[in-house]
Amino acid sequence: MNKFKKMLAGITGMAVLAASGVFAGVTVSSEQVLLGYRGDLDWNSTLNNDDYEILVSYLLGKTTLGEAFALNADLTGDNRVDAFDAALLRRCLKGDCEWKGIYGEVPTEPPTEETTEPTTEVPTEPSTEVTTQPQTDPPETTAVTTTTVPVTTVTTTQEEPDNFIDAPIAKVNSSLFSQGDSNLVIFCIEFPDCQYSNELSASEVEQIAFGAADESSANYPFESMSAFYSRSSKGAMNLSGKVFTYTAKNSISAYNEDKVGLAEECFEAFKDSEDFSRFDGNGDGKIDATLFTVPESASDDYWWPCSGGFGAPEYTVDGVTVGNIITGNVAPADKMNFNSSYLHEMGHCMGLPDYYLYYSTDFDSMHGTAGTELMDADAYSDFCSFSKLMLGWYRESQISVFDSSKGAQTFTLKNAQTDAGNCVIIPYGNLDDNYFSEYFIIEYSTIDGNNSGIYNRGWGEIESGIRIHHIKADFQEDYWYPHLKYQNGSEATNNDDAGIRLIRLVNDNGGPFTTGDVINSSTSGFGWYDSGENESIDPGVTISVGALQNGEYTITITP
Image: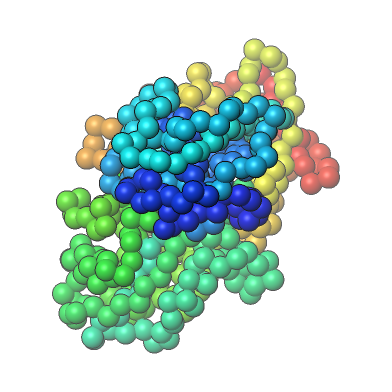
């Protein structure tokens, strides 16, 4: 958001005077006028869902805002426009907070060529009704001469926008949003009988979790959670947060099976000094995600890292409920393990399931040098193309869909561990608009970026090349919570290997495909599911892997 900081600094003639104003019973001096209201982004003196959609569209990078909107969009008054402003706008639309007026000197030069004559009218108190008609009735008490502020339109860029797709995983309705500004509250907790062997301050943990990207770091690519997610998401997700250190009132055994009690105790301890509603980045009335991390000596039976919904939906703090929570005994001092473990758990907070097998002596879901994935048992690697697709971490132009009616088609695949990373989808029949169907998804995965950790440190082998995943993504609502069907450990996948799975690796236990390789129905795992849940149906296509040139692979798909 540095661009917006500069924008705010460059605004002249709009100094906000906290002690001036006609709104909320404050008097305006003769030199100061009411210019508008914070949150009114279409300048129609009305506060409604249109304003919220404009702000969210900007935060997702889909639109730009002109300078005249900088103060209006900065609802919190902290000289930046971010998810906290969207959350405050959402609260105000619900009537939970008071609108603030923007006051400044009467402009001596018209900001644009189109102006209106001075008028004695002032912007009215904004309505929260959904309407497109301006509110022109003046407030009951005013004795100020004002000028009408010209309307500035929110515009998209001149070039055809290449927007991020909407995140399909949002249907799962988890509280941590995978696009835009998202927030994580971290409580580092000790107990009278269980303490950290190497205790770190809150600021030190914040640096570990939310520090800047640093490729020179010994912990790269896990130098921070924020940096990892920014790279993996191509900048679509901006993770930030705050750390609190706390000593619980009781011994750790009192909380082994009472995580709700521990969570409420932590929030109650800090609610007078912190407004937790500001950690609701997407305005859904829930804190995005909360991590309760405890000393490494805590029992694995009760404190092994895990995540899920909060078990007391009736509990609120600062007007919001507690969203997804994470608990675990990986200490912050173990920096790389701390970040990689909880990056995996935050994947659950965004709606992704585990890809590893719950009921298996093997445990790993995908094997071989092409089988690494953060949501599988390899928690030291990047997300694969399917995860990024579900999380909305592809731009529209980065997803190509094979159409058999067009005959043979050649596609270029770019490095998946860069912002240019793309994918190709081969659908089985009709492809669902939200990608909840059966298909193959293809990417060029490398040992760069977020995959460099597992490669450089000898935690496992990984190779660069083309990898293909077989996806059967069905959305299921008729369960106790909405989720992706066929996820490992669900009612649909209670065995070692047989049956439908959400995700499988084509040529499992092998390496990635490279120049000269041909993938067809004789390739292990390259088949659609039949009625017996076996991958036996011929896809009817052949994939030929072409040359690797200038860091890009070509693949040709022939019907």
